[in-house]
Image (cartoon, rainbow, N blue to C red; front, side, top):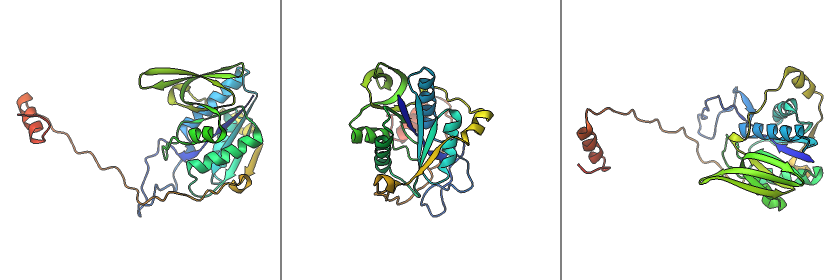
Amino acid sequence: MKALVPVKRVLDYNVKPRIKADGTGVDLSNVKMSMNPFDEIAVEEAIRLKEKGVVTEIVAVSIGEAKAQETLRTALAMGADRAILVTAEGTVEPLAVAKILKGIVAEESPELVILGKQAIDDDNNQTGQMLAGLLGWAQGTFASKVEAADGEVRVTREVDGGLETDLLKLPAIITTDLRLNEPRYASLPNIMKAKSKPLANKTPADYGVDTAPRISIVKVTEPSKRQAGSKVADVDELVTKLAALGIAKS
């Protein structure tokens, strides 16, 4: 079984974002970029399925600027077999990403697509669901446990009331949650080997997809700073302060 794993290059989660002076977005100049953490979990899960003999080949794919090749090399160093880079400058919205992935699925014929539930830069949480809708495939979102066998995938997912287990018929889409696994570190020998693994270059035009944004960002601002708290001497003073705010009756 072939597994397709989309990965995204994002601002490293340890870096504090800075807003551009003109308020048009986040300043990404001279900052560390890395693989989206949820996608890293997806790569790890695909590798574990391969180690169990369920998956035979892992294809990593990234859609973005040319520098996303670094992110794909990380996936290859972790254990992916080959990679596809779809070069697209500027912002590529989730629907366009899903359409490109649909074209790649048509070319590669994977039985399983595993991707992060969301990217930490835009937090849209849409691509996996949109791809499942475009393909008409079964989907298991927010997976905290994945078990595959006999043409089926059992996905355990966290819901408000506890845990839900879904049985999916292949082919299927899975989006990963943080509790699914702990991604491995790529060893130095594997990092060196990743440089010689196949990496194909494509463009959105190869799949007939227009990536022009349908949404425009009006303004980006930093969250307002929280005001410092204050201490009260006793319960009576607390009730008085709450009453002044209209939260409690004195």
